[in-house]
Image 1 (cartoon, rainbow, N blue to C red):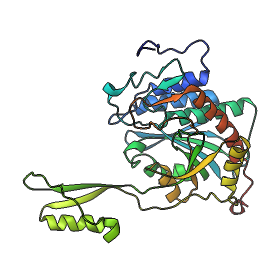
Image 2: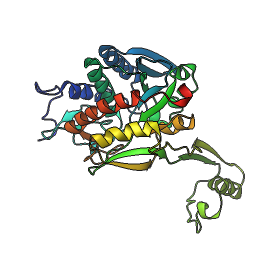
Image 3: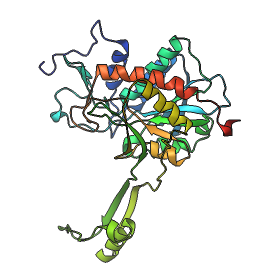
Image 4: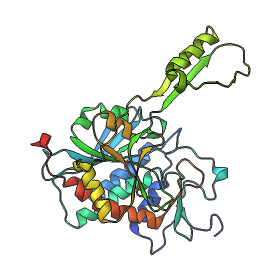
Length: 348
Protein backbone atom coordinates (compact mmCIF):
# COMPACT_ATOMS: atom_id res chain seq x y z
CA UNK A 1 0.00 0.00 0.00
CA UNK A 2 1.41 3.37 -0.97
CA UNK A 3 2.25 5.82 1.83
CA UNK A 4 -0.62 8.11 2.73
CA UNK A 5 -3.34 6.00 1.09
CA UNK A 6 -4.74 4.80 4.40
CA UNK A 7 -6.95 7.46 5.97
CA UNK A 8 -6.83 8.59 9.59
CA UNK A 9 -10.32 7.46 10.46
CA UNK A 10 -10.98 3.95 11.69
CA UNK A 11 -12.75 1.45 9.50
CA UNK A 12 -16.21 0.24 10.48
CA UNK A 13 -14.78 -3.06 11.72
CA UNK A 14 -11.92 -1.64 13.78
CA UNK A 15 -11.85 -2.65 17.43
CA UNK A 16 -12.76 0.37 19.61
CA UNK A 17 -9.64 -0.17 21.72
CA UNK A 18 -7.49 0.14 18.60
CA UNK A 19 -9.35 3.31 17.62
CA UNK A 20 -8.66 4.75 21.08
CA UNK A 21 -4.99 3.78 20.81
CA UNK A 22 -4.65 5.55 17.47
CA UNK A 23 -6.37 8.63 18.86
CA UNK A 24 -3.82 8.82 21.68
CA UNK A 25 -0.93 8.36 19.25
CA UNK A 26 -2.04 11.43 17.32
CA UNK A 27 -1.41 13.68 20.32
CA UNK A 28 2.02 15.18 19.70
CA UNK A 29 3.94 14.77 22.95
CA UNK A 30 7.42 14.73 21.46
CA UNK A 31 10.24 16.66 23.03
CA UNK A 32 11.27 19.41 23.24
CA UNK A 33 7.69 20.75 23.45
CA UNK A 34 5.31 17.93 24.42
CA UNK A 35 1.62 18.80 24.35
CA UNK A 36 1.05 17.51 27.85
CA UNK A 37 -2.22 19.38 28.30
CA UNK A 38 -3.81 17.52 25.38
CA UNK A 39 -2.53 14.18 26.67
CA UNK A 40 -3.85 14.73 30.19
CA UNK A 41 -7.23 15.90 28.88
CA UNK A 42 -7.51 12.83 26.67
CA UNK A 43 -6.54 10.40 29.42
CA UNK A 44 -8.81 12.09 31.95
CA UNK A 45 -11.69 11.79 29.50
CA UNK A 46 -11.03 8.08 28.97
CA UNK A 47 -10.60 7.44 32.69
CA UNK A 48 -13.87 9.17 33.49
CA UNK A 49 -15.59 7.13 30.79
CA UNK A 50 -14.20 3.95 32.34
CA UNK A 51 -15.52 5.05 35.73
CA UNK A 52 -12.23 5.77 37.51
CA UNK A 53 -11.51 8.45 40.09
CA UNK A 54 -9.25 11.22 38.81
CA UNK A 55 -6.52 13.24 40.50
CA UNK A 56 -4.10 15.69 38.90
CA UNK A 57 -0.86 16.52 40.69
CA UNK A 58 1.22 19.42 39.37
CA UNK A 59 4.70 18.38 40.48
CA UNK A 60 6.22 21.56 39.02
CA UNK A 61 5.00 24.32 36.67
CA UNK A 62 3.73 22.77 33.44
CA UNK A 63 4.25 19.20 34.61
CA UNK A 64 1.16 17.33 35.74
CA UNK A 65 0.94 13.71 36.85
CA UNK A 66 -2.49 12.21 36.24
CA UNK A 67 -3.65 9.46 38.59
CA UNK A 68 -6.72 7.36 37.80
CA UNK A 69 -7.94 5.09 40.59
CA UNK A 70 -10.09 1.98 40.88
CA UNK A 71 -10.68 1.59 44.64
CA UNK A 72 -10.33 -1.85 46.14
CA UNK A 73 -12.59 -3.41 48.73
CA UNK A 74 -9.85 -3.32 51.40
CA UNK A 75 -8.12 0.07 51.36
CA UNK A 76 -5.78 -0.98 54.17
CA UNK A 77 -3.94 -3.26 51.75
CA UNK A 78 -1.16 -1.83 49.64
CA UNK A 79 -2.16 -0.89 46.11
CA UNK A 80 -1.09 -1.84 42.61
CA UNK A 81 0.47 0.97 40.56
CA UNK A 82 0.31 0.83 36.76
CA UNK A 83 2.74 3.47 35.55
CA UNK A 84 3.29 4.89 32.07
CA UNK A 85 4.78 8.06 30.65
CA UNK A 86 3.07 10.42 28.25
CA UNK A 87 6.09 11.92 26.48
CA UNK A 88 7.86 10.53 23.41
CA UNK A 89 11.21 11.18 21.79
CA UNK A 90 11.72 13.43 18.73
CA UNK A 91 11.40 12.19 15.15
CA UNK A 92 13.22 12.69 11.88
CA UNK A 93 10.20 12.72 9.60
CA UNK A 94 12.22 12.30 6.41
CA UNK A 95 13.05 8.75 7.54
CA UNK A 96 9.42 7.74 8.16
CA UNK A 97 7.25 5.96 5.62
CA UNK A 98 4.13 7.51 7.16
CA UNK A 99 3.71 10.76 9.14
CA UNK A 100 4.73 9.84 12.71
CA UNK A 101 1.72 11.44 14.41
CA UNK A 102 -1.09 10.24 12.15
CA UNK A 103 -1.20 6.65 13.46
CA UNK A 104 -1.73 5.20 9.99
CA UNK A 105 -2.56 1.51 9.88
CA UNK A 106 -1.36 -0.48 6.89
CA UNK A 107 -3.00 -3.50 5.27
CA UNK A 108 -1.21 -5.87 7.68
CA UNK A 109 -2.63 -4.08 10.72
CA UNK A 110 0.66 -2.39 11.64
CA UNK A 111 0.06 1.00 13.30
CA UNK A 112 2.88 3.47 12.60
CA UNK A 113 3.44 6.30 15.07
CA UNK A 114 5.95 7.68 17.52
CA UNK A 115 5.01 6.15 20.85
CA UNK A 116 3.41 3.04 19.36
CA UNK A 117 5.85 0.91 21.39
CA UNK A 118 7.24 3.50 23.82
CA UNK A 119 4.83 3.56 25.51
CA UNK A 120 1.37 4.80 24.60
CA UNK A 121 0.35 1.24 23.83
CA UNK A 122 0.74 0.23 27.47
CA UNK A 123 -1.24 3.26 28.71
CA UNK A 124 -4.25 2.26 26.62
CA UNK A 125 -3.82 -1.44 27.39
CA UNK A 126 -4.02 -0.65 31.13
CA UNK A 127 -7.18 1.41 30.62
CA UNK A 128 -8.90 -1.07 28.33
CA UNK A 129 -8.08 -4.00 30.62
CA UNK A 130 -9.63 -2.12 33.54
CA UNK A 131 -12.64 -1.21 31.38
CA UNK A 132 -13.18 -4.89 30.57
CA UNK A 133 -12.88 -6.03 34.18
CA UNK A 134 -15.25 -3.34 35.43
CA UNK A 135 -17.76 -4.22 32.70
CA UNK A 136 -17.63 -7.83 33.91
CA UNK A 137 -18.58 -6.63 37.39
CA UNK A 138 -15.25 -7.60 38.93
CA UNK A 139 -13.86 -6.10 42.12
CA UNK A 140 -10.67 -6.79 44.02
CA UNK A 141 -9.28 -6.33 47.50
CA UNK A 142 -6.40 -4.10 46.45
CA UNK A 143 -6.81 -0.66 44.91
CA UNK A 144 -5.44 -0.20 41.39
CA UNK A 145 -3.89 3.16 40.46
CA UNK A 146 -2.90 4.21 36.95
CA UNK A 147 -0.27 6.97 36.86
CA UNK A 148 0.61 8.93 33.73
CA UNK A 149 3.82 10.89 34.18
CA UNK A 150 5.70 13.48 32.08
CA UNK A 151 9.36 13.83 31.13
CA UNK A 152 10.48 10.20 31.39
CA UNK A 153 12.37 10.52 28.12
CA UNK A 154 14.52 13.35 29.50
CA UNK A 155 15.42 11.76 32.81
CA UNK A 156 12.21 11.93 34.81
CA UNK A 157 13.37 14.79 37.05
CA UNK A 158 10.20 16.82 36.47
CA UNK A 159 8.06 13.71 36.47
CA UNK A 160 8.44 10.55 38.51
CA UNK A 161 11.32 11.88 40.62
CA UNK A 162 9.25 14.77 41.93
CA UNK A 163 6.05 12.74 42.14
CA UNK A 164 7.67 10.22 44.47
CA UNK A 165 8.46 13.05 46.89
CA UNK A 166 4.88 14.29 47.05
CA UNK A 167 2.36 13.43 49.78
CA UNK A 168 -0.08 12.52 47.03
CA UNK A 169 2.19 9.64 46.07
CA UNK A 170 2.58 8.47 49.66
CA UNK A 171 -1.21 8.45 49.94
CA UNK A 172 -1.41 5.92 47.10
CA UNK A 173 -0.05 3.30 49.52
CA UNK A 174 1.76 1.44 46.74
CA UNK A 175 2.80 -2.16 47.23
CA UNK A 176 3.82 -3.20 43.74
CA UNK A 177 4.27 -1.46 40.38
CA UNK A 178 4.28 -2.30 36.70
CA UNK A 179 6.05 -0.05 34.20
CA UNK A 180 7.33 -0.26 30.65
CA UNK A 181 9.46 -2.96 29.13
CA UNK A 182 10.56 -3.66 25.56
CA UNK A 183 9.22 -5.46 22.54
CA UNK A 184 10.61 -8.91 21.82
CA UNK A 185 11.19 -10.17 18.26
CA UNK A 186 10.84 -13.79 19.41
CA UNK A 187 7.95 -15.72 20.95
CA UNK A 188 9.08 -14.81 24.46
CA UNK A 189 7.92 -11.82 26.53
CA UNK A 190 10.66 -9.77 28.18
CA UNK A 191 10.29 -8.97 31.88
CA UNK A 192 12.72 -6.52 33.47
CA UNK A 193 13.48 -6.75 37.19
CA UNK A 194 16.32 -4.21 37.29
CA UNK A 195 18.08 -1.58 35.20
CA UNK A 196 21.43 -0.20 34.24
CA UNK A 197 22.51 2.98 36.01
CA UNK A 198 22.78 5.87 33.54
CA UNK A 199 25.34 8.63 33.96
CA UNK A 200 24.84 11.68 31.75
CA UNK A 201 27.79 14.05 32.09
CA UNK A 202 28.22 17.58 30.80
CA UNK A 203 31.84 18.69 30.56
CA UNK A 204 32.62 22.37 30.04
CA UNK A 205 36.02 23.30 28.69
CA UNK A 206 36.92 26.98 28.26
CA UNK A 207 39.66 27.70 25.73
CA UNK A 208 40.56 27.70 22.07
CA UNK A 209 38.62 25.18 19.98
CA UNK A 210 40.47 22.21 18.63
CA UNK A 211 40.34 18.48 18.06
CA UNK A 212 40.65 16.91 21.46
CA UNK A 213 39.88 13.25 20.88
CA UNK A 214 42.27 10.57 21.99
CA UNK A 215 42.04 6.87 22.73
CA UNK A 216 42.26 5.55 26.25
CA UNK A 217 44.56 2.56 26.56
CA UNK A 218 42.93 1.21 29.73
CA UNK A 219 39.24 1.70 30.45
CA UNK A 220 38.13 3.46 33.61
CA UNK A 221 36.35 0.34 34.79
CA UNK A 222 39.63 -1.59 34.64
CA UNK A 223 41.75 1.04 36.38
CA UNK A 224 39.59 3.04 38.82
CA UNK A 225 36.10 4.49 39.34
CA UNK A 226 34.77 6.30 36.27
CA UNK A 227 33.91 9.54 38.09
CA UNK A 228 37.44 9.77 39.47
CA UNK A 229 38.76 9.34 35.94
CA UNK A 230 36.56 12.14 34.63
CA UNK A 231 37.70 14.42 37.44
CA UNK A 232 41.32 13.58 36.69
CA UNK A 233 40.87 14.38 33.00
CA UNK A 234 39.43 17.76 33.88
CA UNK A 235 42.28 18.54 36.28
CA UNK A 236 44.86 17.51 33.70
CA UNK A 237 43.20 19.69 31.05
CA UNK A 238 43.99 22.83 33.04
CA UNK A 239 42.05 25.77 34.41
CA UNK A 240 38.52 26.44 33.25
CA UNK A 241 37.49 22.80 32.80
CA UNK A 242 34.55 21.63 34.89
CA UNK A 243 31.99 18.84 34.73
CA UNK A 244 28.54 18.24 36.11
CA UNK A 245 26.18 15.26 36.11
CA UNK A 246 23.01 15.72 34.13
CA UNK A 247 21.97 12.30 35.37
CA UNK A 248 23.68 10.08 37.90
CA UNK A 249 21.86 6.97 39.03
CA UNK A 250 23.62 4.94 41.70
CA UNK A 251 20.75 2.70 42.72
CA UNK A 252 21.11 -1.02 42.08
CA UNK A 253 17.85 -2.28 43.54
CA UNK A 254 16.28 -5.23 41.77
CA UNK A 255 12.83 -6.73 42.12
CA UNK A 256 12.58 -10.28 43.39
CA UNK A 257 11.79 -13.01 40.89
CA UNK A 258 11.92 -15.76 43.49
CA UNK A 259 8.98 -18.15 43.60
CA UNK A 260 8.52 -17.26 47.27
CA UNK A 261 7.82 -13.61 46.46
CA UNK A 262 4.04 -13.03 46.45
CA UNK A 263 4.09 -10.40 43.68
CA UNK A 264 6.27 -12.46 41.39
CA UNK A 265 4.25 -15.57 42.19
CA UNK A 266 1.07 -13.79 41.07
CA UNK A 267 2.64 -12.30 37.94
CA UNK A 268 4.48 -15.41 36.78
CA UNK A 269 1.55 -17.68 37.65
CA UNK A 270 -0.72 -15.83 35.20
CA UNK A 271 1.96 -15.96 32.50
CA UNK A 272 2.38 -19.67 33.07
CA UNK A 273 -1.37 -20.28 32.89
CA UNK A 274 -1.60 -18.21 29.68
CA UNK A 275 1.43 -20.07 28.27
CA UNK A 276 3.45 -16.86 27.91
CA UNK A 277 7.16 -17.74 27.80
CA UNK A 278 9.10 -15.19 29.85
CA UNK A 279 12.66 -13.96 29.52
CA UNK A 280 14.01 -12.28 32.64
CA UNK A 281 16.36 -9.40 31.91
CA UNK A 282 18.06 -6.29 33.24
CA UNK A 283 16.73 -3.35 31.25
CA UNK A 284 19.45 -2.23 28.79
CA UNK A 285 18.67 1.46 29.29
CA UNK A 286 16.69 3.25 32.01
CA UNK A 287 13.02 3.87 32.83
CA UNK A 288 11.09 5.39 35.71
CA UNK A 289 11.15 1.95 37.33
CA UNK A 290 14.59 2.76 38.70
CA UNK A 291 13.14 5.57 40.80
CA UNK A 292 10.25 3.41 41.97
CA UNK A 293 12.61 0.64 43.09
CA UNK A 294 14.98 3.13 44.74
CA UNK A 295 12.05 4.38 46.81
CA UNK A 296 11.54 0.86 48.11
CA UNK A 297 8.74 -0.43 45.91
CA UNK A 298 9.06 -3.64 43.85
CA UNK A 299 8.50 -2.99 40.15
CA UNK A 300 8.59 -5.01 36.96
CA UNK A 301 9.09 -3.60 33.47
CA UNK A 302 6.69 -5.32 31.10
CA UNK A 303 5.31 -4.35 27.71
CA UNK A 304 3.41 -7.33 26.26
CA UNK A 305 4.77 -7.16 22.71
CA UNK A 306 6.28 -10.37 21.37
CA UNK A 307 6.99 -11.21 17.72
CA UNK A 308 7.66 -7.49 17.30
CA UNK A 309 10.91 -5.77 16.26
CA UNK A 310 12.36 -3.44 18.90
CA UNK A 311 11.71 0.01 17.44
CA UNK A 312 11.49 2.36 20.40
CA UNK A 313 13.22 5.65 19.51
CA UNK A 314 13.68 4.34 15.96
CA UNK A 315 12.27 5.44 12.62
CA UNK A 316 8.99 3.81 11.54
CA UNK A 317 8.06 2.74 15.04
CA UNK A 318 4.99 0.52 14.82
CA UNK A 319 2.88 -2.01 16.67
CA UNK A 320 0.53 -4.54 15.11
CA UNK A 321 -3.09 -4.21 16.22
CA UNK A 322 -3.36 -7.93 17.03
CA UNK A 323 -0.32 -7.72 19.32
CA UNK A 324 -1.81 -4.64 20.94
CA UNK A 325 -5.15 -6.36 21.56
CA UNK A 326 -3.42 -9.45 22.93
CA UNK A 327 -1.72 -7.16 25.43
CA UNK A 328 -5.09 -5.99 26.74
CA UNK A 329 -6.08 -9.61 27.28
CA UNK A 330 -2.83 -10.28 29.15
CA UNK A 331 -3.35 -7.31 31.49
CA UNK A 332 -6.97 -8.35 32.01
CA UNK A 333 -5.58 -11.57 33.50
CA UNK A 334 -2.63 -10.02 35.34
CA UNK A 335 -4.54 -7.31 37.18
CA UNK A 336 -6.98 -9.62 39.01
CA UNK A 337 -4.09 -11.79 40.19
CA UNK A 338 -2.00 -8.85 41.42
CA UNK A 339 -4.94 -7.04 43.00
CA UNK A 340 -5.93 -10.25 44.79
CA UNK A 341 -2.57 -11.04 46.39
CA UNK A 342 -3.44 -12.08 49.96
CA UNK A 343 -2.55 -9.72 52.82
CA UNK A 344 1.16 -9.64 53.46
CA UNK A 345 2.64 -9.93 56.98
CA UNK A 346 3.29 -6.18 57.13
CA UNK A 347 -0.35 -5.54 56.24
CA UNK A 348 -1.70 -7.49 59.16
